Length: 136
Image 1 (cartoon, rainbow, N blue to C red):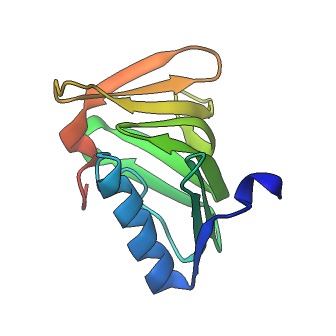
Image 2 (cartoon, helix red, strand yellow):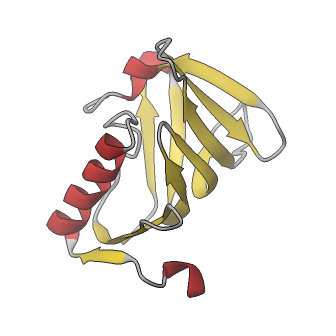
């Protein structure tokens, strides 16, 4: 795949998880934003910001502080930049009986303590950043 060209790739659960956590930290995103399962590969192309995560199976996680169920597919990708992931694929948040895909995640800059999730339909949901801290 052309967008993965020139990317840094880590394989295996331990190395992949370390890289995923490092990317979130480097781009000032909450550490618990991507509660992943058995990760097999993480990649990042510094020149474009393109990142991808492959995991063995889909993971569903409930962020208890906000009572929100989120689904993470076996393949997640998007473009990461400071306080933001755009063109995100592979992440869905349950709304009533539907699972609309999340297309963008953005943390306010300057910080207000808020994080915004935008669906491809243009619907934006805002939550406290601490709801996505590690271990939530």
